Image (cartoon, rainbow, N blue to C red; front, side, top):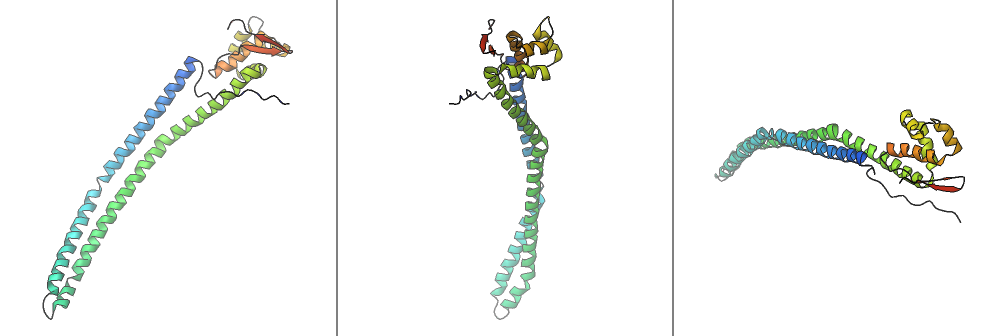
Length: 225
């Protein structure tokens, strides 16, 4: 029968107030920045859309020209004997009006496409890198915090080793105390030193310190907590 390690809760924020406050402020800054960028993109989109006015005017003019010539052609078509020929004489005017209206609509659609493209470009260039970086850093911290919290309950020795290899030398020496022999204390399995070294690693991630360690099959509980 194999023993399964206890499941560790997923931490979204640090347990220590200082680190947690930094994370909350970072989240707020990212949200505010994203809102500002999206607002700027929407404003730019609206400004560019004002360039549709000439195209809309061209469309209206083309529709009016086509309407005039179409009405004239309908009227001419009622003339006996020569109505069809007279109506045909107005066909170029009808076609010109249609071409003018189509050109105006094409210009309106082109401006709309440019406005949308510029808005998305602003979002992609200004907001996406910030949000992506924030998400990656937060995801990496969440995964590391989960592993560290699991080690806090099961493998304080590993946390102490990580403090020796990754921790700031000054903090490691202060954690060991007057002896200063951090590596030697770790090799001897000194439970008090292991707990203090584990605190260095856990504090680096904003997590609370370990409260117990097992050495040589014996569980030692920290008395100052």
